[in-house]
Length: 463
Image 1 (cartoon, rainbow, N blue to C red):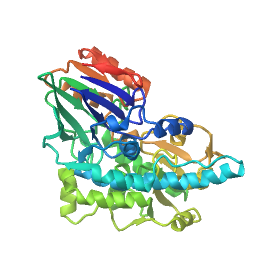
Image 2: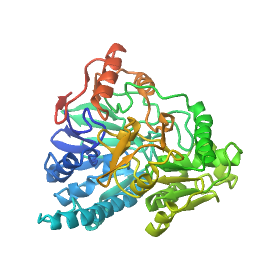
Image 3: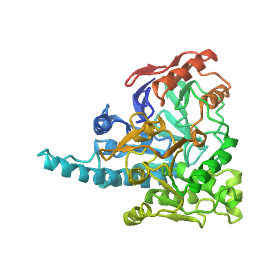
Image 4: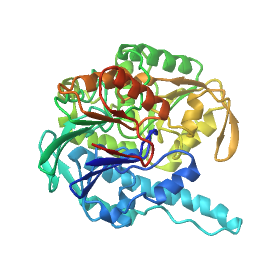
């Protein structure tokens, strides 16, 4: 039995882990790589294994860095089933369609430039038709219910508390008459966070495959979010500026809506317009409403009282591009929440272009920013950035809120691993930049975990 890390190995994006059991090949996640454009193009266009040889895909959750290469997999010959929770399947339907649209739209713009230079046109990595070929391959699975995915391999999904439908995957793999329990964390959420349930506590594992996004860091206390968020928003509003919030359409946007709802309801922030400028976020929020099985008790209580924290009346959802452009011509204080979360594409680029150079405005960073992304450059405090190839000075106040993170930090990841009653005989650390993965690997070793491996990209670990 062996696992090969073909993505998210000493890296935080492009999750693809190939598990080989008794001659069967099962892929854990199949995500898009996000980073430098040339490297992303190379990695996303050419998969490092034969898709036709994959028997099944076990998907942990819907985020594009975990699911976004599924249409490529099908386009290149995969004919098996894709297993996920029901909420993940619903979210993937809108996320994958949106990704295909963005590819097509971005290439249309790029190919105009290439044509002027006498260069051949580029084809999208996959199209809307490829997405429609992929979606029927999904098989929705209930939490806490075992299902056989291939002979000798059964999976049980446990709530990971990361985003709607996210799952820790317990894999019971039988090879040569011996049963091995492999636990794959996917992206692990945090405890005591609003909206979603806390991550499930796994009781046993022979092999643990764990993420390490924040493996070497600790988040600030959750209780500080409300006060600091209110202070930042109020400060920008007093200067009659705009608060620009780059946010992932799934998970983070709904959390931001929830927090703004509480602040304005309780009078901690003055009433002002809140625009959700992302058609995808509108669709995602509707899917949230369809899956109360993922909500914690507090969220369900709010919904039962007819208090709608995911779509309260002061929010204005922006669907049309012309409506989005109008926001940049308005001069009153407002909050604009827009995708993409790493500032690499979409409408957020136009809002940054129009607002980043003014000291009146504020940019609130609420999500993880991968290396070589525009979002990462803002988080790192660069004073001059390029948007659509043109330089802009960064004069707006940039505030980073790690407390909004939906990823467990190093302490929480270690607590999850320690809660496994029988210490795994092997632990594989993935899905983190090299310094974060290595730091978490050291913590695991120091805590008594035997045989901790932090694989390189393409490295195989046998167990």
